[in-house]
Image (tube, rainbow, N blue to C red; front, side, top):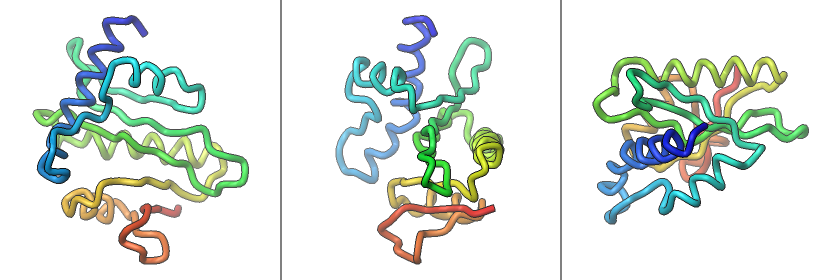
Length: 143
């Protein structure tokens, strides 16, 4: 990935997460610096899938190399540019992650997310539920 693309991707992710300010009560950046983003991007255990259209990054997700002992594949940082929402990008990316999990013989997907009601509702509609009913914890979807 070129330096220019890395900067554009970082900006796109931060732009998609900016609405979290309404939830946190303060300005929110997923990556407080470009250097922090590059560290995340360079971590060999992180795998990024992105959707790019007409030279713009419009959606993406990051999943982690699963541990051998885990029966789930962890993913996070699922984002869609605000002007691209409600077009199926998130569902498409989650589908790709689900296929990856199945190829790695995992039994499900795991995500930690802000407890924003519309996010919880979205993931529940896709079959995710809180682990052991703990609404302060992670959400999981088993296949």
